[in-house]
Length: 293
Image (tube, rainbow, N blue to C red; front, side, top):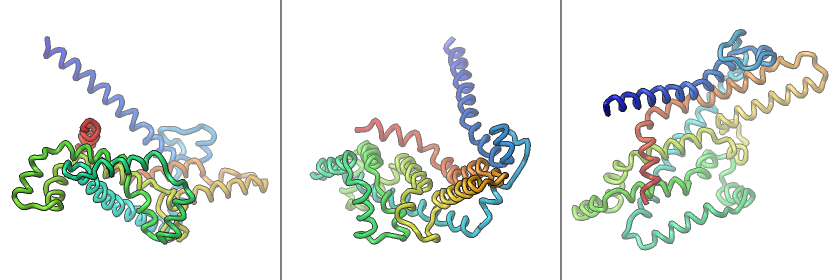
C-alpha cells in the first residue's frame, strides 16, 4: 500500500512539475516567435506562438551596426565577469570575518552593514561620490563598483559559513595555517553552494544593469548591452512619433513591437547559459543560507 501511495505521489509530482515547466517555457517561445513575426501581423492579430508571416526585419535593424552590438556585448561580458568575481571575493571575505566567533568586533560590523540597508544618502550624494570624489565618470569601474557589495548577500554568506564546523578551523590553526589559508583552502571549497547562488545573483544584476550606464557613462565604447538596447528602442520610438507627427501614412515601417521581442532574445539568451552550471548548487545555497543563524 505504501509503495502504491508513493507511486501515485511521484506521478502527481512529475505531472505537476511538467505542467509548470511548460508554463515557464511558453513565454520564451512567444517572445522568440513574436521577434520573427511581421510587424503589421502583430498589430492586426496580436502575438502568436507560431509566426504566420515570417520576418527577420527586427533582427536586421538590431544588427544593422554589428560592430556596436559586438562592442556592447564585450563590455557587458567584461563587466559581468569582473564584477561577479570581485563581488564574490569581497562578499566571501567579509562574510568569513563576520562568521568568526573569535572576531570581537563582528557584532558591531554586522550592525553597521545592516544599518546601511535602512538608510541611504540618496541619488545626488551617490552621484557626487562616484563622479567628483572617486573620479569614475566614463570609466569601466563605474559599471562595477556601485553594485559590487550587497548586504543581503553578505548576510546569506555569513549564515552559510557559520554552519561550517568550528573544529575544521581549529584543526587548521593547530597545523599552522593562517586565516587567509583557512579562508582560501577550507572555507571557500566548503561554501560552493552559497558562492554559486550569490554568483548567479551578481551575474544577473550586472548583466541586466543599465541604470549605472545611464548615470555615469557617455562614452559610446563603454556602453553595455542593456543600455545600448535601451537607447536604440528610445530612438525607434522617437522616430515613430516623429513620423506620426509629420502625418506620415505608413507608421508601421519601424517594427517596434517585434524589435522589443528581438531585444529580449538578444539580451536574455546568453545569460541563460549560466544557469545550468549552478543549478545543482542553487537550491542548497538558498536554503542553507536562509535557515542557519
